Image (cartoon, rainbow, N blue to C red; front, top):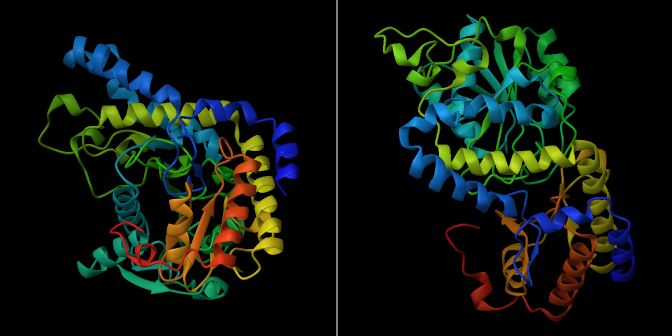
Length: 405
């Protein structure tokens, strides 16, 4: 297994990019689907912003360093990674906040319809945002299982809101088919790309998607709590109205008018002042992913996960696969069921192999193709095999739940 992994690494066209990340010595990092690794260039970029733009430029840097244009500039760099035009994407706020904005916009665009359709087990924040609006009498939540979503679409549904790649299982929806089904029913569609952007093929324009949101700190390597991004299809730019009408979303914010006038296009998604330090870190990560390009990233992702899946089936058969077997039907991760998944995860972390756990019994391994090697994957399987065979996970300290799992 390890000999095969080394041979695959030697032939890997992305192998040089691993050196562009600051990976701790002795650590195998398979959790980039939760928090991406630190690009080495990010340190220098943040130092420049702190010392030169903030330290020397002070408030002048809103103009001289174009801080004011940061959300649009980063959005334009994200756009090719998700199959969008540069003026359809903007970096701002968090996924949760952007979901609220776009749900509100969709309800406004579909008067007489109040239902937001999603699936049970969707990422909690997606469901919580619907529930928050429902609690204010603005929306109604409807949930349908994955194989019953199309049947759940009717004349009451204003918006179909789904996560493209499921956070726990890694299962990936057919974006084109479901978008068409929603449109045929007169509904709009909002895709959460948090576990997709930068790792799997996404073509929002080709699929005719209406809206999307995505996370900046997973595969885009923007840092913990990095700003998110939002997509609004060009055809909606003149009609969508989002409810969080902050001053940065105004057409002329420095006119300081008492009356709100929305900015043109996707810029009306803005609300508050952009966090410039966080934006600088995100921009570094996005630029690195854009340099590599989606085609080689996807190819490496699928090869890595297939290598890992095959090795797991041979060496760790007691771990029950949760993710779809075919690489085109899943994200850049593999999930496994085991009743002691949490303790097993902690035993791996104690050996410097970082995956993660999702309640109640799922162990996840993420494959960020820019920096994970085949040897990393092979060593992780070998360590897991030894942990399972020896029962090394069965220790009190590995069963003590931390605040963040």
